[in-house]
Image (cartoon, rainbow, N blue to C red):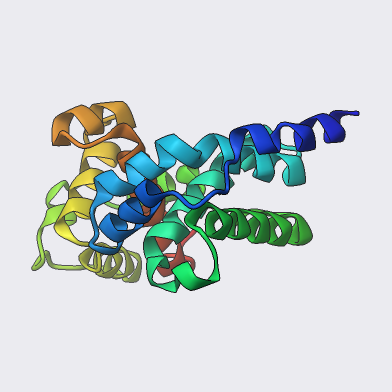
Length: 202
């Protein structure tokens, strides 16, 4: 009964008719306009979340995977082909495929923030996060420094403010004057990148 209910509401919240506004948002995302991604999230996150939750049946995993879906939309925007379908159909395909893959592997490849905090605790020097010529003294320090150097300045700033200054994501949004959902997506993408680079330390 619960599954039927979930399926029955999809047509109501997922309108797959071609939207010129959606196409405009994808063009903005292709130009690396983060506000376009935030607006797309506001419009379609409910639809995509419903699909993800229907497959995973786990609120926490569904919320995390939803962020992963929008990260992939941002990173793989060039893979969208208008001739092969409309924007929402493309996004639903991404959400469905990632959900099935997650369920098959019985895990979601999401950064565990507690692990990252443990790695970051290897250094208590704030300059460690913002200087490109900070001297290194051990292998762990070197690996962390090299990983952080691979980030752009905005990513470094957000990591520094989060892990050294204790800012919440809502506080980052206000401080940097960027949308909250953009902060969430950017931080998730940054932490996934760091986790990959620091896998030997975590």
